Image 1: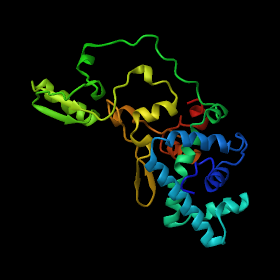
Image 2: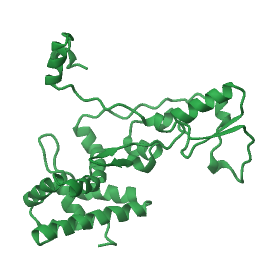
Image 3: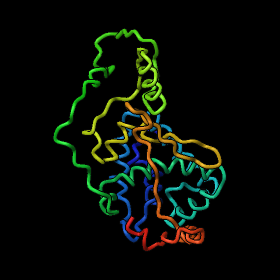
Image 4: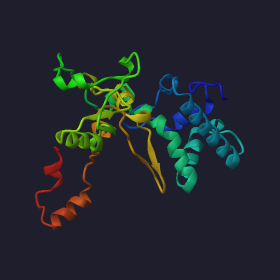
Length: 263
């Protein structure tokens, strides 16, 4: 199966159907379209392709070891039960979550899924982008026809919150500072609200950097002028009623579900 695309891979097809069945709001995933999009996105990343197919081979062999036959030959109900049970195990559960991550990302970022879940329209881009004098100091490596020699007192690697702040403080003290950044410089015209276009530009490894331990925790790393600071954000979820009740007991009487619902 090493030469198969994801659209042709029976285990990928079965996993996709098992992960995204029809629900109350969303229909079942269009497996062919979803896997075709993943094939296109992974076309220039052979290492990721191999890793993903290795994970699919692991899932198939894991199912064969337990059930005696391939994962894709099981009924949808049996596949769902197998994945639910596998998710509760210590090691295999982590491997399953890691394998499912790119499938879930492709599904969540699908245009039809975004529309069905009420995601906002893409950001309206400004008609004109202002330019500043300091932008003349930005040099992209791709624009250099030969090696570029710069004389400086300090060279800083990375333009995020740490590197940029250090560069500012040193420059304010009269030192000549050069900042080297692996990512590109993007202005407001590149922030169009389309995650499928923005994530490859601003994130290292498509935002798939994770920390592993007792759980797999996403650790998005920026790859742009501004570094991780450009993409850093907070994840905001609705406060559970039990938490609001405890807050009110502690004196925050206005923190009712009704008052906070609009926000």
